[in-house]
Image 1 (cartoon, rainbow, N blue to C red):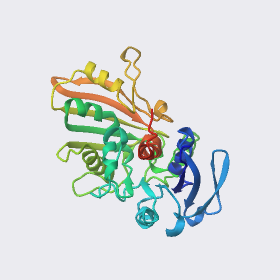
Image 2: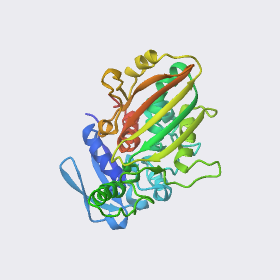
Image 3: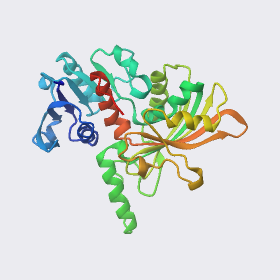
Image 4: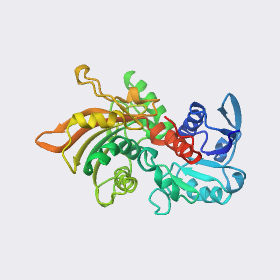
Length: 338
């Protein structure tokens, strides 16, 4: 008889928490018991899992007794505060925040890229930044085949990256603008409807914002390539769900687009969408709800046989968050499958 697991979700009522529940149902994850946790304002609500309503309890140090896997998606502050208690209680913590990603003692994992790093965990595993996760799934197969020296990437990041409130703001602002009313930014610092703007995180001394620096540091860590050059520009766009990325790679050896397509067509976690005759390439509307990352628009950099351009779309709430976390747990219990 196969074992079932006691699962806790910290941040169960948020956008990623809700996706975690749906993904576990979709994947038939062997969860025998669910503990739903959140902040005081959500206590008393319920979440639905496998047709049953589960009451939401308070996220606190003593909430993890008997828990096998604790998925944290309640922000970096709460992860730092409560994840150590979950580990002490015997749970394996899979944390979706930025709290532990660059801690050298904590594996940062995308299973298609560096599942082997899971063997080094000490009860705590970090889920990467959504843009980094989507990028790495798309370019890792090329890196394995030809080595990547340099990545220039521009992101087109959806409202879902900022949570449920931001998605609601895109919807309400779009209605306001179309009906002649002024858009009122609240979740975002600028109007998101019919607009785009530089990712709304603090600009560091190096001129890159926090999101861009995460992409640099996390890609290097997961690839075990500390010298890899990564040059990101992260942009918010008026798309509800799924991030897209325009990518230019400089490789160690020449690679033709035909070879890249052949490699990506059989790569785990990738769906090749590259139909030039129909002008059909990855789109966020088609990536939404998909576990795989869509990769296409593959072409040579003019005059540079080592340069390869491509376009990527991936669901920020799934591969960029909830699905990657559940996939990590599947690897740990030996049930990972396509």
